[in-house]
Length: 272
Image 1 (cartoon, rainbow, N blue to C red):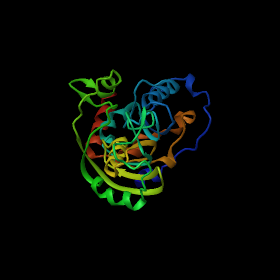
Image 2 (tube, one colour):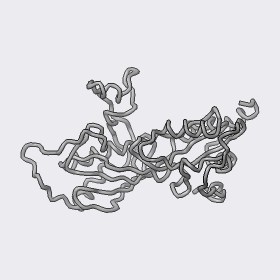
Image 3 (tube, one colour):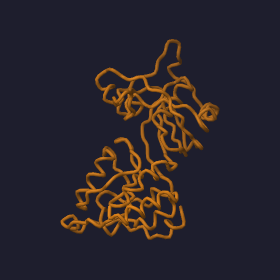
Image 4 (cartoon, rainbow, N blue to C red):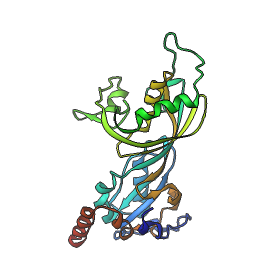
């Protein structure tokens, strides 16, 4: 972790202490939230806004509802630097289930058993087979986003079109994956750790790995363990959100590009 952040005392989790009844208009900084399962990223932002009675709240990168882990939530004047935090590298620990595909590329489904004509119904897929295909997913690669994603085509969101039964044809994006580490494997479940750049869909990675192995695959669980210099071990739960748990923006700015510090300084002088 960045020295400025690692030496900042990340507060311990604790109960809410009635802080929601007061207005914290001058509150400015960052909350590191461990996003709960089934919550949208907007749910977390909205909950933070309502608990603290602050108007300006935003996050630095969406997590799907079926994912958990690091969600960086900016409050007050800290929202001015969100754009500089969105491009940070990420780390994920994911679970891929082979032998089936999913319309959403995750366990939301519907799930379809993978059984192309002539395929072995009980493939003897070894960890060494998986290891052999990993190099094709490392480095800068083209990746097609999930059909059910927030990507837009001519102003239309992909997931909205897909829900209407009219999926959009999505173009591949250039993304960068730094490393993929196999944590464990026992057919049909593979657990991996992925270090990647911004814009990477782990759902797409799961789908594409299943396709490359000829067995199908979908993402059955995902936890984001790092966003830039922010780690899961330093996150708090939703119930622990309180003014005294915020990381001051002064502890975050040194790790951001100079342009971010200039923009924040200008906003502060302007009183915005």
